[in-house]
Amino acid sequence: MPIAIDRLEADLLAPDNSSQVFVIVGDLDAGAADVLDTVLRDAERDAQPVVLQLGGVRFADSTGLAPIAEAVRRCRRAGRRQPEIRSVSDGVRRVYATLGVRWSPQLDLAAWDAAEQNGLRLWQAKN
Image (cartoon, rainbow, N blue to C red; front, side, top):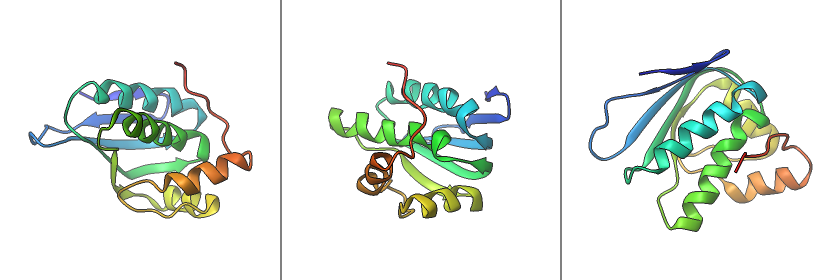
């Protein structure tokens, strides 16, 4: 069942008993950050690892991608496997490149943190 708001949709594919795969489609910006944060927090309640497919993201900015970094931090603190990013669109790649973050299945959190220290983060998680 898709979760949609404004121009973002997060759809959970049928779990394969080893992970929860979310296909994210649309614009991943300030207007969608809270939606992505909710999706990730809800998914973290399950013991299965989270996989994000961001290939369908048309537009992205650092604000929209920040919830992924927050999810990585929460998972590390809890000793759980961090979300895996299996595919990204050109828009997501551009944001990562601008921030100096290497794209890989595991978010380069050290590079993300360095970018945040330079003032590039605009979104704050609602605890």
